[in-house]
Image 1 (cartoon, one colour):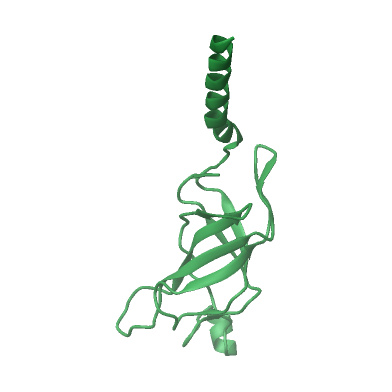
Image 2 (cartoon, rainbow, N blue to C red):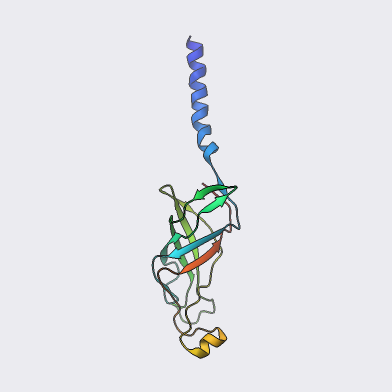
Length: 150
């Protein structure tokens, strides 16, 4: 009787440790994360400034929805024109995504947001001058640089 209880405790303990890994899912590197900005971002923001967005489309892997559209996403300004003398273009990247109430760190490629041209000449040549402004509600796409295990 005591031996049976002992074996049952061992089995339950093993099951408790194994259960989380059974539900683990991985989003592979290269997966596209389409987002819609919530906060405004400008090329004059300091490097490291955080911005908020929401996931535009579900993240689906092997037919399973791993992250739902509307999930909260956080990003940061990777490089900006806030400091004069910088040659780097204005760029942003994603840093985390909220999955079932848990903040999961992500690493993505950086994206260079384009501002709207202000003159017809700029529109013809695809050039923007001055401050680039990304308005709330703007869409952007990022690719995961590393796989993410949920």
